Image (tube, rainbow, N blue to C red; front, side):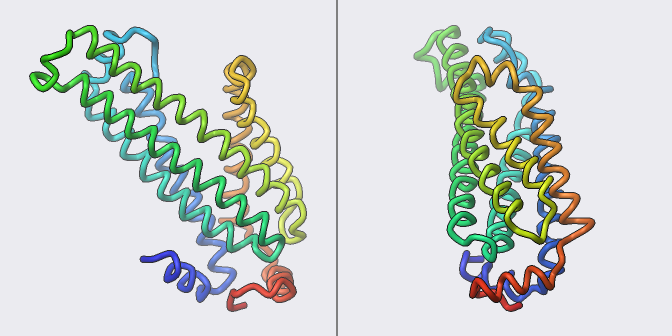
Length: 248
Protein backbone atom coordinates (compact mmCIF):
# COMPACT_ATOMS: atom_id res chain seq x y z
CA UNK A 1 0.00 0.00 0.00
CA UNK A 2 1.46 3.37 -1.01
CA UNK A 3 1.88 6.12 1.62
CA UNK A 4 -0.84 8.18 -0.07
CA UNK A 5 -3.31 5.29 -0.01
CA UNK A 6 -2.36 4.45 3.58
CA UNK A 7 -2.90 8.07 4.61
CA UNK A 8 -6.29 8.11 2.91
CA UNK A 9 -7.29 4.81 4.53
CA UNK A 10 -6.22 5.91 8.01
CA UNK A 11 -8.05 9.21 7.56
CA UNK A 12 -11.30 7.30 6.96
CA UNK A 13 -10.98 5.43 10.27
CA UNK A 14 -13.04 7.07 13.06
CA UNK A 15 -10.75 9.12 15.37
CA UNK A 16 -11.47 7.00 18.46
CA UNK A 17 -10.58 3.79 16.64
CA UNK A 18 -7.54 5.50 15.17
CA UNK A 19 -6.21 6.25 18.65
CA UNK A 20 -6.71 2.62 19.68
CA UNK A 21 -4.91 1.59 16.49
CA UNK A 22 -1.87 3.60 17.59
CA UNK A 23 -1.88 1.77 20.91
CA UNK A 24 -2.13 -1.61 19.18
CA UNK A 25 0.77 -0.83 16.82
CA UNK A 26 2.80 0.41 19.79
CA UNK A 27 2.07 -2.87 21.59
CA UNK A 28 3.12 -4.90 18.55
CA UNK A 29 6.36 -2.94 18.45
CA UNK A 30 7.12 -3.83 22.08
CA UNK A 31 6.12 -7.48 21.52
CA UNK A 32 8.71 -7.80 18.74
CA UNK A 33 11.48 -5.41 19.84
CA UNK A 34 11.89 -6.77 23.38
CA UNK A 35 12.11 -10.49 22.45
CA UNK A 36 14.36 -9.56 19.51
CA UNK A 37 16.78 -7.79 21.82
CA UNK A 38 16.75 -10.64 24.31
CA UNK A 39 17.45 -13.20 21.58
CA UNK A 40 20.36 -11.13 20.26
CA UNK A 41 21.78 -11.04 23.77
CA UNK A 42 21.26 -14.78 24.21
CA UNK A 43 22.99 -15.56 20.91
CA UNK A 44 26.15 -13.77 22.00
CA UNK A 45 25.84 -11.17 19.24
CA UNK A 46 26.22 -8.28 21.69
CA UNK A 47 28.98 -9.52 23.93
CA UNK A 48 32.70 -9.07 24.33
CA UNK A 49 35.62 -7.96 22.22
CA UNK A 50 37.08 -11.43 21.61
CA UNK A 51 36.54 -12.13 17.91
CA UNK A 52 36.97 -15.91 18.19
CA UNK A 53 34.67 -16.29 21.20
CA UNK A 54 31.99 -14.02 19.72
CA UNK A 55 32.04 -15.76 16.35
CA UNK A 56 31.84 -19.19 18.00
CA UNK A 57 28.93 -18.09 20.21
CA UNK A 58 26.96 -16.66 17.28
CA UNK A 59 27.48 -19.72 15.07
CA UNK A 60 26.51 -21.98 17.97
CA UNK A 61 23.22 -20.03 18.27
CA UNK A 62 22.79 -19.12 14.60
CA UNK A 63 19.04 -19.71 14.54
CA UNK A 64 18.54 -17.57 17.65
CA UNK A 65 20.73 -14.86 16.08
CA UNK A 66 18.73 -14.88 12.84
CA UNK A 67 15.38 -14.79 14.64
CA UNK A 68 16.65 -11.90 16.75
CA UNK A 69 17.57 -9.93 13.62
CA UNK A 70 14.22 -10.77 12.01
CA UNK A 71 12.25 -9.62 15.05
CA UNK A 72 14.30 -6.44 15.15
CA UNK A 73 13.44 -5.67 11.52
CA UNK A 74 9.76 -6.43 12.11
CA UNK A 75 9.76 -4.13 15.13
CA UNK A 76 11.25 -1.38 12.94
CA UNK A 77 8.40 -1.82 10.47
CA UNK A 78 5.91 -1.39 13.32
CA UNK A 79 7.77 1.73 14.48
CA UNK A 80 7.56 3.24 10.99
CA UNK A 81 3.80 2.64 11.05
CA UNK A 82 3.64 4.07 14.58
CA UNK A 83 5.51 7.17 13.43
CA UNK A 84 2.98 7.77 10.65
CA UNK A 85 0.05 7.33 13.04
CA UNK A 86 1.53 9.64 15.69
CA UNK A 87 2.19 12.23 13.00
CA UNK A 88 -1.48 12.19 12.05
CA UNK A 89 -2.54 12.35 15.69
CA UNK A 90 -0.40 15.40 16.44
CA UNK A 91 -0.91 17.44 13.26
CA UNK A 92 -3.67 19.51 14.95
CA UNK A 93 -1.20 20.59 17.65
CA UNK A 94 1.71 21.61 15.44
CA UNK A 95 2.00 20.32 11.89
CA UNK A 96 5.61 21.42 11.38
CA UNK A 97 6.95 19.89 14.59
CA UNK A 98 4.98 16.68 13.99
CA UNK A 99 6.55 16.42 10.53
CA UNK A 100 10.07 17.07 11.82
CA UNK A 101 9.58 14.51 14.60
CA UNK A 102 8.39 11.94 12.05
CA UNK A 103 11.45 12.66 9.90
CA UNK A 104 13.82 12.03 12.82
CA UNK A 105 12.06 8.76 13.64
CA UNK A 106 12.19 7.49 10.05
CA UNK A 107 15.89 8.33 9.81
CA UNK A 108 16.50 6.48 13.08
CA UNK A 109 14.66 3.43 11.74
CA UNK A 110 16.67 3.53 8.50
CA UNK A 111 19.98 3.74 10.37
CA UNK A 112 18.98 0.84 12.61
CA UNK A 113 18.01 -1.21 9.55
CA UNK A 114 21.50 -0.62 8.13
CA UNK A 115 22.85 -1.92 11.44
CA UNK A 116 20.96 -5.16 10.82
CA UNK A 117 22.77 -5.52 7.47
CA UNK A 118 26.09 -5.38 9.36
CA UNK A 119 24.83 -8.20 11.60
CA UNK A 120 24.04 -10.33 8.55
CA UNK A 121 27.48 -9.48 7.13
CA UNK A 122 29.15 -10.72 10.31
CA UNK A 123 27.18 -13.95 10.16
CA UNK A 124 28.07 -14.43 6.49
CA UNK A 125 31.76 -14.00 7.27
CA UNK A 126 31.81 -16.39 10.21
CA UNK A 127 29.91 -19.06 8.29
CA UNK A 128 31.43 -18.37 4.86
CA UNK A 129 33.54 -21.52 4.56
CA UNK A 130 35.43 -22.03 1.31
CA UNK A 131 34.26 -18.74 -0.23
CA UNK A 132 36.62 -16.93 2.17
CA UNK A 133 39.63 -19.16 1.59
CA UNK A 134 41.73 -16.14 0.66
CA UNK A 135 41.61 -14.93 4.27
CA UNK A 136 43.11 -16.47 7.36
CA UNK A 137 40.78 -17.67 10.08
CA UNK A 138 41.89 -14.86 12.37
CA UNK A 139 41.20 -12.27 9.67
CA UNK A 140 37.70 -13.63 9.07
CA UNK A 141 36.89 -13.64 12.78
CA UNK A 142 38.27 -10.13 13.24
CA UNK A 143 36.38 -8.74 10.24
CA UNK A 144 33.17 -10.32 11.48
CA UNK A 145 33.63 -8.63 14.85
CA UNK A 146 34.24 -5.31 13.07
CA UNK A 147 30.87 -5.63 11.31
CA UNK A 148 29.19 -6.52 14.58
CA UNK A 149 30.70 -3.45 16.24
CA UNK A 150 29.59 -1.31 13.28
CA UNK A 151 26.08 -2.60 13.92
CA UNK A 152 26.36 -1.43 17.52
CA UNK A 153 27.57 1.99 16.40
CA UNK A 154 24.66 2.26 13.97
CA UNK A 155 22.29 1.57 16.85
CA UNK A 156 23.90 4.37 18.88
CA UNK A 157 23.46 6.77 15.94
CA UNK A 158 19.83 5.67 15.62
CA UNK A 159 19.30 6.44 19.32
CA UNK A 160 20.26 10.07 18.67
CA UNK A 161 17.49 10.40 16.09
CA UNK A 162 15.02 8.57 18.32
CA UNK A 163 16.02 10.90 21.14
CA UNK A 164 15.19 13.93 18.98
CA UNK A 165 11.92 12.26 18.01
CA UNK A 166 10.91 11.74 21.63
CA UNK A 167 11.93 15.27 22.57
CA UNK A 168 9.61 16.74 19.94
CA UNK A 169 6.79 14.28 20.66
CA UNK A 170 7.05 15.11 24.35
CA UNK A 171 6.85 18.84 23.66
CA UNK A 172 3.83 18.31 21.41
CA UNK A 173 2.07 16.23 24.07
CA UNK A 174 2.67 18.93 26.69
CA UNK A 175 1.14 21.48 24.31
CA UNK A 176 -1.67 19.23 23.08
CA UNK A 177 -4.36 19.82 25.78
CA UNK A 178 -5.87 16.42 24.93
CA UNK A 179 -3.21 14.28 26.63
CA UNK A 180 -1.78 14.52 30.17
CA UNK A 181 1.38 16.58 30.43
CA UNK A 182 3.25 14.00 32.51
CA UNK A 183 3.33 11.73 29.46
CA UNK A 184 5.00 14.49 27.49
CA UNK A 185 7.50 15.18 30.26
CA UNK A 186 8.44 11.50 30.34
CA UNK A 187 9.02 11.47 26.56
CA UNK A 188 11.27 14.54 26.91
CA UNK A 189 13.27 12.85 29.69
CA UNK A 190 13.63 9.71 27.58
CA UNK A 191 14.73 11.79 24.60
CA UNK A 192 17.36 13.62 26.65
CA UNK A 193 18.54 10.25 27.96
CA UNK A 194 19.09 8.86 24.46
CA UNK A 195 20.99 11.99 23.45
CA UNK A 196 23.61 11.26 26.12
CA UNK A 197 25.08 8.68 23.72
CA UNK A 198 26.61 11.67 21.92
CA UNK A 199 29.15 11.62 24.77
CA UNK A 200 30.04 7.91 25.12
CA UNK A 201 31.54 8.06 28.65
CA UNK A 202 28.29 9.52 29.98
CA UNK A 203 26.05 7.48 27.71
CA UNK A 204 27.64 4.15 28.64
CA UNK A 205 27.40 4.99 32.34
CA UNK A 206 23.74 5.99 32.15
CA UNK A 207 22.65 3.30 29.67
CA UNK A 208 20.73 1.09 32.16
CA UNK A 209 18.87 4.13 33.52
CA UNK A 210 18.20 5.47 30.02
CA UNK A 211 16.70 2.15 28.99
CA UNK A 212 14.48 2.10 32.09
CA UNK A 213 13.22 5.64 31.50
CA UNK A 214 12.69 4.94 27.79
CA UNK A 215 10.64 1.81 28.46
CA UNK A 216 8.64 3.61 31.15
CA UNK A 217 7.95 6.65 28.96
CA UNK A 218 6.95 4.81 25.79
CA UNK A 219 5.24 2.00 27.70
CA UNK A 220 2.98 4.43 29.56
CA UNK A 221 2.23 6.31 26.33
CA UNK A 222 1.30 3.01 24.69
CA UNK A 223 -0.97 2.01 27.58
CA UNK A 224 -2.63 5.44 27.66
CA UNK A 225 -3.46 5.33 23.96
CA UNK A 226 -4.55 1.70 24.12
CA UNK A 227 -6.61 1.82 27.33
CA UNK A 228 -7.59 5.42 28.04
CA UNK A 229 -7.50 7.13 24.66
CA UNK A 230 -8.02 10.88 24.21
CA UNK A 231 -11.01 13.27 24.41
CA UNK A 232 -12.09 12.99 20.80
CA UNK A 233 -14.21 16.14 20.79
CA UNK A 234 -11.23 18.23 21.89
CA UNK A 235 -9.06 16.63 19.22
CA UNK A 236 -11.72 17.37 16.59
CA UNK A 237 -11.87 21.00 17.64
CA UNK A 238 -8.11 21.33 17.28
CA UNK A 239 -8.15 19.50 13.95
CA UNK A 240 -10.86 21.79 12.60
CA UNK A 241 -9.06 24.90 13.82
CA UNK A 242 -5.81 23.69 12.26
CA UNK A 243 -7.53 22.93 8.94
CA UNK A 244 -6.20 19.39 8.72
CA UNK A 245 -7.22 17.00 5.96
CA UNK A 246 -8.70 14.48 8.40
CA UNK A 247 -12.32 13.50 8.15
CA UNK A 248 -13.41 14.54 11.61
